[in-house]
Image (cartoon, rainbow, N blue to C red; front, side, top):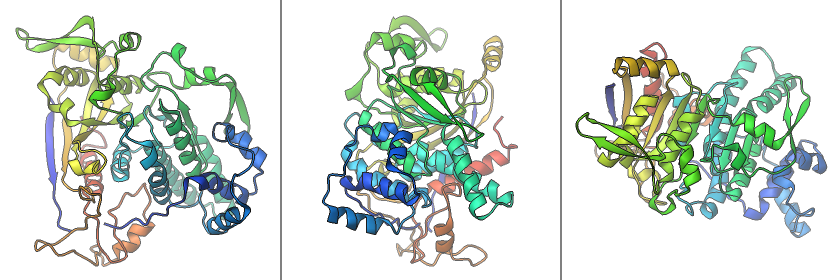
Length: 482
């Protein structure tokens, strides 16, 4: 069995306050249109470029002219495409999240956990990424921003500046955004995710309305028609929607999968046709006491929690041998005796890269549930065959960490680092005396630094430190775990 390395994180030092701007739901269309018109693009061109977002919108904005004038004047001070992914993401999710979450077990992953997951997965430009239960697009937006910052740094290293640099950035971002896919069964969430992607460096990727658990393209309810894809030479190619997604979403073709699937007892899956597709976890298992392991039967599960099927779906989406994933899972799957067959199946199919235990505060006050973020790599066929022949599982290290603090309390109030006497610590500086507030302000999603506010208070959040330690853990092993 794998050797484990457990590290527990406790700090007495604290991170920065994010100031949210709240816009009414009615202004969402105006936000995007104001930004688009500022770029000099005509309304008709915008509708043609983003038909999934605008085809059902009224031709006129149903607001009084004086309100439109006021909103445009207020929004004209902001550069939405050029603004930080963090600021836009937190503001946008604050607007829509309260109205859209929680109806089907979807409690959206807090942004610091998303950033930690993406930092640990470390997606690169050109990698094909997906969230098969994308919700409002938290994971895919952060992945796009993370890859985008790498592109900015590469362009700067090439010596490009000014208009030339911006043109190169826009071109490369349009290309890489098309490598990022998001699926969700809720059409309202899909529209929100598409707008979220558009607001973040002008890319909506492959966000589409599909049941992320349905692997059979013949059962996908895709619209008729065509879509356009941007090409490296600046041209566009047209594809039939069904043909494109059938090929693009092929199992075994993704480098990175990151997802927080819906979970709960109220939404169990009992569709026999769907369960039959899951040849691993869609069937019943029984424990063989004589041989000391679980064996799969030929009988289908009667009902099964969606997060269990999502485990198999995520693994099947990954490229064999190299594909990596992060899944948010309730603690029971990793600890309940009755769920041991899931763990046995997962260890056979995957190498476990890391486990990060989260405190109950992560999802509070929305829901009180303790979770793990599990990071894994899909094994190749050769690896699995070798282990089957030798009947000896590979031996490797697993990075393990326990996050005790996530920057907020159970009521969602911010927490800052304190000294042993309980006094809030201020004026955080690094070892060279630099003001960490200024570094925090300048940091990007790629850096994922601890947040420090204008008073020098550091948010009491273990997640940036855990991500940094994971990369040290990898570096000590030559960049990968063996």
